[in-house]
Amino acid sequence: MNQLMRTFSSVCRARYGQAVGKVPVDIGRICPNRSKGGCIFCRPASFTPLYLESTDAVIIQVEKAKEAMLRGRFKKYFAYFQQETCTAAPVDELLRLASLLLHDDSCVGLILSTRPDAVAAELLAPLSELIKASGKDCLFELGVQTVHEQGLQLLNRNHSYADFAKAVTRIQQYGCFEVGAHLIFGIPGERRSDMLESVRTVCALGIDALKLHHLQVIQETPLEKLYLAGGVELFSLDSYLSFLLEVIVIIPETVTLHRLWATSHPDLLVAPKWNVLASELSKKLSEMMNQQGLWQGKALAESL
Ligand code: SF4
Image (cartoon, rainbow, N blue to C red; front, side, top):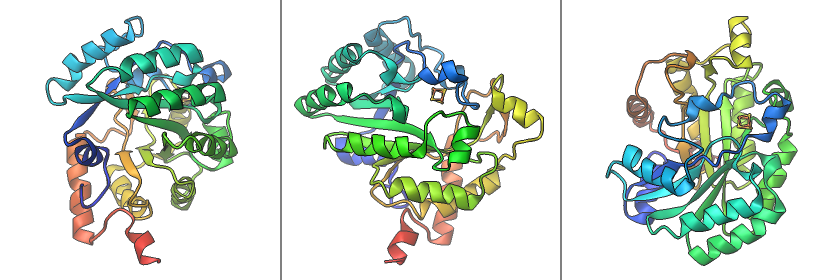
């Protein structure tokens, strides 16, 4: 296990004895929030791998991904239902796909990316049976972005923080799912203290995973208009890394960190353009943590 942070890769090495990749699958469903204007920062193409075609059968997508993405680096993978809101699909369709993937020996589990208001009870019960029977893992990755209602409204999320908290509890009660929260740092109008409060609040729900992003402005989104009108202040690279040092120490050591920054497609990214590889960011952050004697959960341990 990484000594500074509980990262997704270090957890996989400990749990499966090897590195594990995430293979994105696109089941061609449109997020229900798009009919209400969509989240102001969201443009699907900004996080869609080039080889991914929703018109391909899921098993073909997985085979293409194994070739295009894993390239022999990983022998095992999580099927990552990352596009749009995967649980907008009919329950039967999702269960059929889940079963198909769970029967692939090289698939160690599923990651289902969705909205807190789109997790049907009709899905959870039969999916929990499938997961228990397979002995594999299943993580629900719930977008919430902030616990503050003003921020949720500005982002046009069209759900409340209470919706998120309820969804977490409903998923946790099956005892076989992990739950993760997706947060964005730098939402207009939020101070650092508000962002830290979001981290503390979602962690207090006993979540298992976090996916953290700095706010990025993507072309042809409502956020771009707001940014061009001067209404958005973005993190610089240095200010974001120093903010992450404040964040990581308040995250319990049991929470797995799937992501610490956004990596939108450079052709679509308006700002901030840091022009630095994710591997360099990781290296820089680790150096800063080592220099300052920090590790994940340090502030929590010291407050006991
Ligand atoms: S809920 Fe997710 S997929 Fe839907 S518009 Fe918002 S960010 Fe995009």
